[in-house]
Length: 264
Image 1: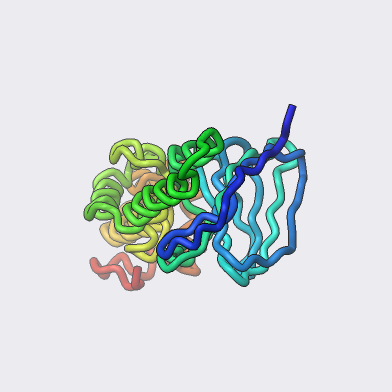
Image 2: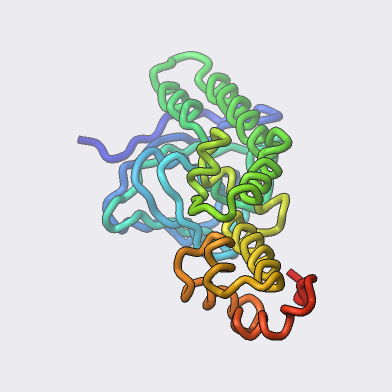
């Protein structure tokens, strides 16, 4: 049984998106490729399994349903997981619009596999194969650009949900499900617009309310419970990590002042 195959592609010199290579591979556990430098853009779509992609910025875990992007002149290495090695589809290309497919600083993105599966089927075509692959690249570019400019409001809705439910044992998966998005995608757009992760925003919101409860005369246990912490010891640890003092000490120093004295 074959573990890899390349699709015959002829360099037609298309101006905008010009396919150069394509294929697929089912990697052995721990298989690594690189370090290597290419003169064209190369995108891998991980169909199954997982691995790690390395460039000058560091290592990036990649899972099924994600792509990793290699740019011209970039030194890269990628390694299959030792337990669940990846199987991926790749396509290499250049052209005037090639940079649009690799836009942004994040080399790993979520992506549907429809275009890549279609590129694999191009091997069955005897005529106009390169035109067909170029067409799939345009569809892929449209999908990726749509992800980079998400519909407005998701990050605001997530923040509003956290502010309204901080006292509950909410999870990031719950918020993403409520919005009909994947957690990974929502996390990415939330951080892009707010500068922090959803978990960081949840902690900040809880601490903001905990400070207010302490200033109102609540005990440490009461403030912890009202702020969404079932474990008072965990609450005290998180409070000290954020403010540098214990909640009990903070309450003694600020109870007479109804306004929190620490900038959240």
